[in-house]
Length: 159
Image (cartoon, rainbow, N blue to C red; front, top):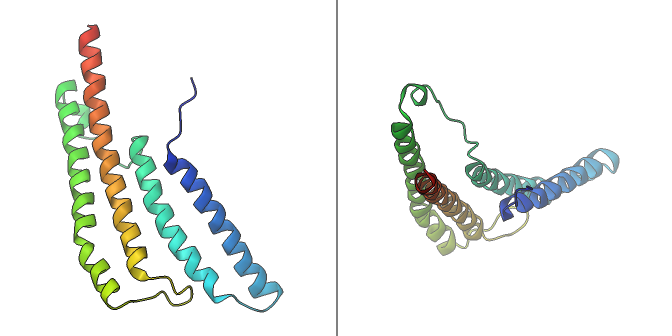
């Protein structure tokens, strides 16, 4: 059965395509036309940042984050399950704390009407986008915990 992809995967493909096109334009204009574009570097930086956070969210869905499993190998199945839930809840909490604490940066950028250097995009919006991505990561961790608990109950009911 083919696994259904979540929107993060489609967003990653879209952002990566933009990143490739923008970097290609930068190389083309800089080395072929000898006319460097100022906005391409900035746009590629912002797209890359959002791409990283989107990838982190997608990694949660696939349970693909880097993790040291030394302790897991010596624990019983029940303790391993509890540890996995605790780790996921802790990661969700850390993501929410980061998102919550970024409100001051967003507020300051909004008050000062700070704009990005080349694109003239409000920096408050870019900072808010990072906070939203951390909220999405936290949501995906909580979703993973919920799925683990549901799966465990389904297995217990079948036995």
